[in-house]
Image (cartoon, rainbow, N blue to C red; front, side):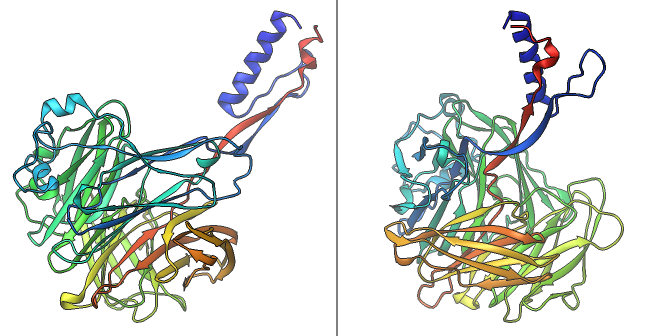
Amino acid sequence: MNRTTLSLIAVATALAAVTGVASMSGPDGAEPTATAQVLPRPVERSSLLCPAPSVSDVAETTYTSVTPAGTKDAGTDGAAELRESTVTLVDNDKPKDDGKNEEEDGGKDGGKGSGKDAEKGGEQGKSFLTLKDPGTPVSAEASGAEAPALVGTATGRFAPGWTAQQTTTVPVGGGRGVLGVSCAAPDTEFWFPGASTQKSRQDYVHLTNPDDSAAVVDVELYGKDGLLKAESGEGIPVPARSSVPVLLSTLTGEAADNLTVRVATRSGRVGAAVRASDDGGGSDWLAAAADPAARVVLPGIPADATDVRVVAFAPGADDAELKVQLVGADGTIIPAGNETLHVKSGMTAALDLGSVTRGQAGSLLLSPAGSRATPVTAALRVVRGKGDKQELAFIPATGKIESRATVADNRAKGSTLSLTAPGETAKVKVTASAGSDGGEPAEETYTVKGGTTLAVTPPVPAGLKGSYALTVEPQSGGPVHAARMLELPEDGVPMFTVQTLPDDRGTVFVPKAREDLSILGGQD
């Protein structure tokens, strides 16, 4: 084959790869003889970031990492590893001898750190957790306030659906509670409805940079009247492979509840999560909500919730008039007296729903109350227990599971899986992985009736030792949203945490070209 023919083939192949549709006509104007179709392929690389878990000396943290087994065409090579990051503080070079915790120091100037630290960046930390085989979780533990943020990468057969969970138990003190968060992928924008700068709350947004160059981040706070003045939230440097905690109350002089936090990068990318602690009310992580949409689902409200509050924000130019519905075990209802929620453009609105579930687990559905579909983002603050025996958790809006979703660190007791079908009836397969220290996988298929939430005790691996992961895969029917609640009660306090299950994005769509090269004249 001569060089001219090779060049033509290269051009045709490049067009097919770039556009997803390639076509060539013969000299006589015949029908195109090369076509392309878009096919799903497993991702080849994934990144996850876990924030520094706690500043309590009595904190106990478990990290669990897993990749679902059986991803087709993922190959046989690859690795998955979480490594320690370098925690960035103000005056990072000075020893800490004043007895103050890291986040207090990081909050003095909004977590910006010194210019010297920002320029220096972080060195790659030591290995903390390495995955051995897809389908088998691996766990590691850390104690006290010195546990670092983690930066992780998975490649090859470990990349599709790679998941890591961080679960921290703090039995006493101001940060008492179970704090759970699914380690998240880096991005350039995040929304956190439900934060606060009230005196009773200490909310930190943790910014973790996985890359070898510094990132620059803006943190914006939106209340009931719009954007709060927060000049110190602009241009926060996050050094390479480092994590910066930012105390939200240091960014503004306003003590405000029901805030929406927007994290956006000017350069680079970061992972972000908000750690919220309420005096006497417990603590937990507030994970980023799904991208703003006209219709949002917040799955997994516990059956025994004593207080539920929805916080919503409209980022666009139009106000949002939302219909509020509870998707419960027996159907979808409109809570009496809380039929709608009006959210002004660029402002945050909140609605207290009380004990809306009334003994049955459910999910909240926000949808347009009229003809105008205005995108919003939202989250729930959920309380279980009462008085000094209460504990809080957060449930951000989450998208439907397109293909598969996984949540790690489930225990033999204490896990509840909520499956919500806000539209048509759906059939869902749930797989329990092998145990981290032993146990055989198990599987169960559930039918979720349209307009309902099904809360179940998930399947448990036979002979389970350690913890295990749950993988949810829709099989047929309408869209499904899911969440997992993990209960770890302590001294009469119903300590718990809820993680939503967004799609794991384990596949990407790439074009595949089919070519007929006879039009090139049959040259050798």
